[in-house]
Amino acid sequence: MEKSESNIVIKRVKKVAGGAHGGAWKIAFADFALALMAFFLVLWLIESTTNLEKMAIAGYFSDPTNLGAVGDGGTPYVLDLQGRPLNITNQGLNLSLVRQDEEPLVDADEEMQNPEFVELARLRETETLQRLRGDVEAEINLNQQFEWFRDSVSFEVTEDGLMVQIIDRAGRPLFNSGQSGLRPYALEILWAMGRIFSNVPNKISVFGHTDGAPFSSEDGYSNWELSADRANAARRALIDGGLDPAQIAQIIGMADSVPLDEEDVTSAMNRRIVIMVLNSVAEARIEAQSNAGLNAPTPNPELIPPTPTVEIF
Image 1 (cartoon, one colour):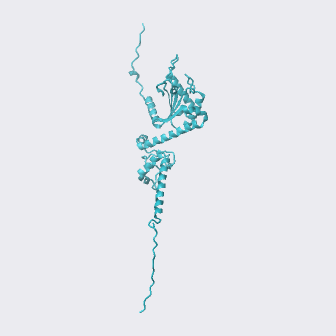
Image 2 (image 1 turned 120 degrees about the vertical axis):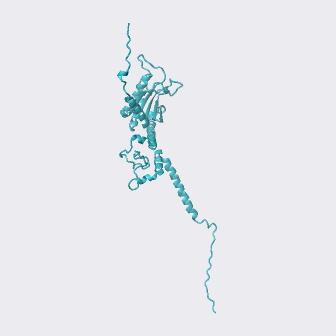
Image 3 (image 1 turned 90 degrees about the vertical axis):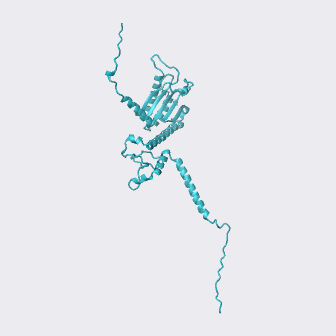
């Protein structure tokens, strides 16, 4: 009986130290690097967007169902503003889809009762005033002619708008003592401001302040009249620089009633011109005050008591 021949196969397995790690770690590391890059990209986007854009993005993600309300599943509005499109300047986010010619579907009173709309409008105005402040500061810093002026002006965005204070210096006064005529260098800076402020639709209030040094003439001309005349001189300079006269909301003389240096009322810093670029809230308040005066009822002449006559003997 013959023995059957069979092939014998020998398999040798080569063991390598660390073989369990193989190339899988490379895939895990690539996923980690991709996630880290996306994380830093989100941080960069957050830093580069404005507060208004952040609110618009947050509104989109808080209620994305609004996107299916129009046509092919998209909507031309960034936020649901109860039928009122928001007119926003494109500042990086694609806000150009917001239609500006849409007919308002809600009354202005109802619109202003929407806290989301009011907050968006407030943020937009604040950013506009901040940019306006930057424009004025750039005009001053880049022009060597205004080098003297850098220490004489202050800027602050307040609840009423952008406040610009032009302050007297001991050796560089804006006006001659006791007079309302502006010095030539003061005219130059007010002309520049008039040109810059003409690029925004905001109304402007101008305040004149004097120091506490007694000033009075035989005809009764006092610091009250002087401060009002100086504010009016600043108004004329702003208009000569290009400001629309219709933008002037108020011209007010404050005399020495609001000193910057309360300890020394005669200090030069108390003599100043304040220009307030009003926001919409302040404009509405001033307009309401004006309308209240115009609409005040006229007293009935029959109800006015007669003036007593004095008999001279």
